[in-house]
Length: 227
Image 1: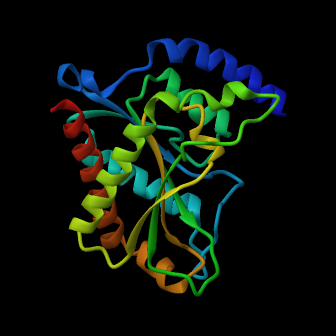
Image 2 (image 1 turned 180 degrees about the vertical axis):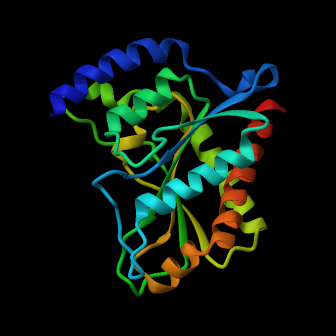
């Protein structure tokens, strides 16, 4: 399976690393934003005590964020329905679509007593490398500082919304983010195994508030790269 990933990634990255888009072109065109609602299909992700699923909440959030951003940007989604692209398909869609930034949406699956935390995750400066698919590690390298700026922008706009959750920016060696040739973060929107977080995430008004905060953070990041 890993060899299959290595083959596809060699094709993807060969065509994208040389022409990776940067935010400096935003003033001349709409930004291309890739939203990645996690899981899908038979992979429900985390299940909440109320029966809610990570795949459904993330998809709803992605559609709400898309609606708030689409007037001034071009929005792409890694999935438009209830199916589960694998990591190579998700990153290939972003790289081949020449996305300018990538935001993956998930929920946490920690112990039920842990609640009230939103995590914004970017790659650390030093990451593990797979001996049989080193090409997998190359895509992100030129964009790590921009990924940190994107994470900070999202955290700022979430704080401005006075969300009840604590906002934490973290580093993690995430397989999904490594081949992406643009600024990229993964957002864990809450712990779906926590009854408190599950109830909050299931509320449409709260979903709208969170989606607006994320959309504002993306806009803020784009503006910062233009000016």
